Length: 228
Image 1: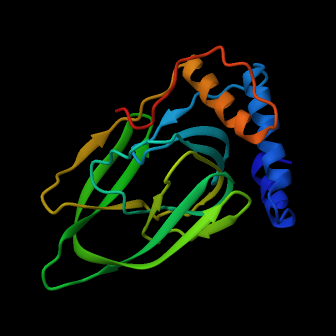
Image 2: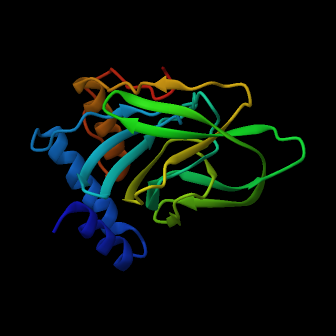
């Protein structure tokens, strides 16, 4: 069974999130012991991403936010995925605002397509102009699970330290989207990989929050997702 199928099964059956947190602890312990290889990557939306598993249109990532981290997008934090999302909150609080894109007489934003590849993210301006309003606001805490369909604009706010296990199912022909300022042109965004030491430090920090016993802190280096 692959990681996506295993976690989908755990999330469906495990209402309190206990088994999912156990899965995350095992994954991080394997990473720290060298049995699993992964380099965390800084994301413009303010978190660090561990690429856990990818197979065809399916994928699993572990997202971690550090207290005080700030997003630094080149458009805005309002975005829509090209994939259906299932997210299990391991700890902390995630606030999701669902955004309704409108078509006002005087638009305030432009819709951008984000095309990701090995060279980075190409953020491409489209002719589509828009406005927006917040349709709903929901809070999710440790043990909670939330879903988002592809194409739904939203903003995820994290007021402190948090981590989530994210399952994604890509929908072909549906690009990632973002709302940005009217005058922003096409541009590239290059994500920065954390070093091996930074990745290990992040993994230790997550593992400490998922276990009762604190691990020895022998790595001081941190991968700050808020630092470009």
